[in-house]
Structure formats: structure tokens, C-alpha cells
Length: 323
Image (cartoon, rainbow, N blue to C red):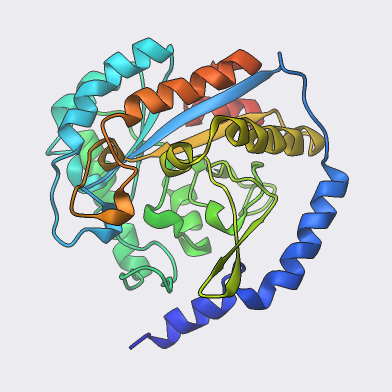
């Protein structure tokens, strides 16, 4: 039986049918104000980020780590081929298990924190199996995760991404208190505009930089019921979007950012388990080792159109933070 908290979250989900009139008005309003194209030789900042977590994240029936080690082993070669720097958001309880690989990667790439064991850092969600984590426990887990970094000689993380992009204002204040400057937990699947914000006010040192989402909603029908959805710059979207539409929707994102007075930038998200096939899970049919080549091909398409500059999240902070 669905809990009252999950029912409330379902009713508040802005993608649900009851919000469609508002969503359609928002779509029209945004298209009127941001229908511009940026020159094809424009410089675009690109942050390639990976959430290093146990296999399948919240959808795991049992905890395994089969995809993590081969993924970490492949990263140096992938970065060299792309000429890129990565940001790895690491689940705190995996630092000890994979500390050797992380130690090798720390010189070239940013290591951020991805919660501790894939818990919720905000309110319950109707589509997730987890219950919310109390604030005292969150603080304990944050300290524990940071201690794991210190114990393995890793630089203290300054970028954070909550599992499932679930974080509330209590979590954000906690992050600021512990020295974090970047949070990438904004729920992009709700159509969060792809622009940086200061969620705790203008004097805050914490900047929210969301995973890139197309601010222009799309619509689909399931069981004859219409829903809104937003295209997010993820491995799943790359694997299920043709090249023409891929360039089109990212072009809309970049035009929106320029209209908003923000340096054009993209934040990409993938997980180690998306680079491994899961034959017994139809929902994850797009997952495959071929996704390494797919990622390189899609980025190559972007490179043909724009001047790509790869940055870590802490570097992106320096480029896009409000003056």
C-alpha cells in the first residue's frame, strides 16, 4: 500500500496529468522567449559526470558491484580518447572497496560524493522504494563519507550529488556547513531549467548546477493518460535518441542558456552499470559495453558543431557562478 508521503509526492509531481495545462503554458512561454540558435562554432563547456554506485542503484534486488571495477579500469583510456576530464560522484561506502582505483584517478579527475549507501537525502518519492533519511543520520553519513575520502588520501570532496536527485533544503544547508560548493542534486527529470542557481540565497557559497535537462517539455501517453516528460542529458537518452534529435534538443538547451545570460554548458550523467549488459532486465535493454563507443560518437557529433571544452564540476563552478 502506498504511504501518505508517497501519495502526496505523486499528486505534486509536475509531470502528472493534472498539471498539463500549466505545463503547456510554460512550454509556449519558454519557446516565445528563448527561441534562438547559438553559432555552431561557439564554445560549450561540457562536464562528463558519473555516479559511482552499486549495480542498478535503487532498483537493485541485491547489492552487487560487478559493473564498477571494469568501469573504473576503463576510465583513463576513455578520458585520453576524448581529451576529457571527468567528475566521479562516489557512493561513500564504495571508497574503501575501490580506493586503489580512485587514488589513481584523483590526479586527473574530480572526486565528488554521492551519498553514502544510496539513501534518500530528502522526502520520499512515489517512484522510489526508499524511505526518507532523518537529518541526524544524513549528517552522520556525510561525515562518514568524508572520513572515507580522508582515510584513503583522497582530496576532500567539494561537489555533491544525492542519489536519485533527491535532496531538500536541510541537506543543502548541511552541505554548505561542511564546505561543499557545488550541488548537482536538482531533480532534472522535473524540467529544472539548465542554469546554475544559489538555492540557499544570494550570500550562500553553495551553487546548484543541475544535470542538463531540456526546459521545453515533451508529452507522451500511457494507458490513454497523457503525461509530460523532460529530456535529460543521460546515457539512457543518448542510447534512445537519434543523432538529429540529439543535436536539436541540446541546441535548444544551449539557446535557452544564452538567452538567460549563462555561459552555454552541458552536464552529462551516466552510471557504471549502464556500460554492462543485463540480459534478465528488459527495462535496462539499452545498457551495454557498446555504450562506450556510443558516448564517444555522440560527443564527436557535438564536437563537429561546437568548440567543446571539458571541465570538472568544480571548474564549471568557476565559469558559471553568478557574479
